[in-house]
Image (cartoon, rainbow, N blue to C red):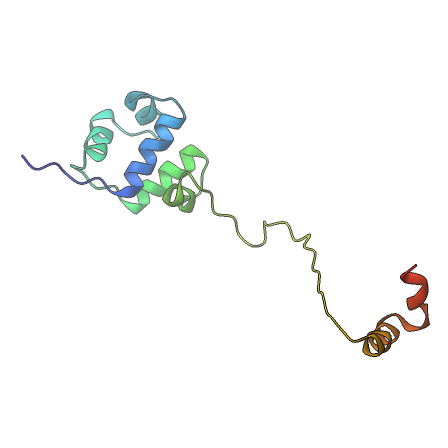
Length: 114
């Protein structure tokens, strides 16, 4: 008998179940699925609908995208820390360096370099 393929999203849900140290019964109860249905899904005998995945994500207090990428968590660029530092190194001849420093810092450039 040919073994049924399990979708990677279902594999990720199984990882979540294991990481939360839940049994199949406990996980089925948590996501409000009948145990036989959850067994069929985990065995690859029944497909998981997107609407069901959304409901599971809500019950797990996760975003759907985080189930897709589990165990990694996707972070939007807005959520990332924007405290970035930039550093530029430029090599110049001495006379050109003096001119650039004067343009950037005005007459205070000698005081800044002390």
